[in-house]
Length: 191
Image 1 (cartoon, rainbow, N blue to C red):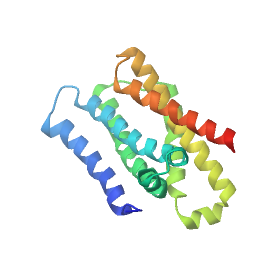
Image 2 (image 1 turned 180 degrees about the vertical axis):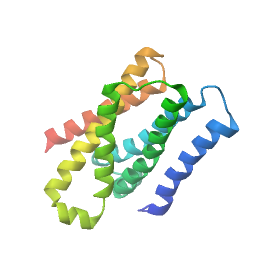
Image 3 (image 1 turned 60 degrees about the horizontal axis):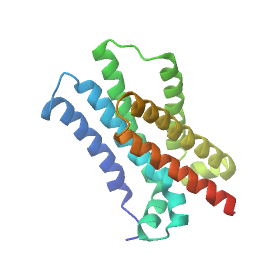
Image 4 (image 1 turned 30 degrees about the vertical axis):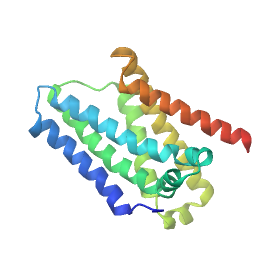
């Protein structure tokens, strides 16, 4: 199996995102359901983004069937991230409306830029758009975009790890990102 059916991959993102909303509000409602939906939807979207982000580095180090599948499906992992992260945006909006809390200006500007980059990458994730932009411009957009998004998640994970519990999932996510960045740096140095 060299390639996953793209429809199933993106459908998984949609179904998992819908399940999280259903779980938060119907299956296990709590007084913090808006916060939990926002948190879990962020974690879900990160997993799709991380898979796309790590595909090339992992394939260069561990050439096997799994890494080849990740690499061949990187575009659709990215599009699946865009779907899941759009649900996260809905969860954030719901959370702020429900709690009467206000997001910080840093969150609005930084997060807003992240969403703009994410949608720009999603819109340009076709062969036709690659030709239209030119491979150099396309690569620049996607390199800046994915690194910005990974950096934004990393910033949040580090803050959460120190505010809540150093032995949390956020510490694992942080270590994973740093490991992939190290692999990417080593791969560049080798070339």
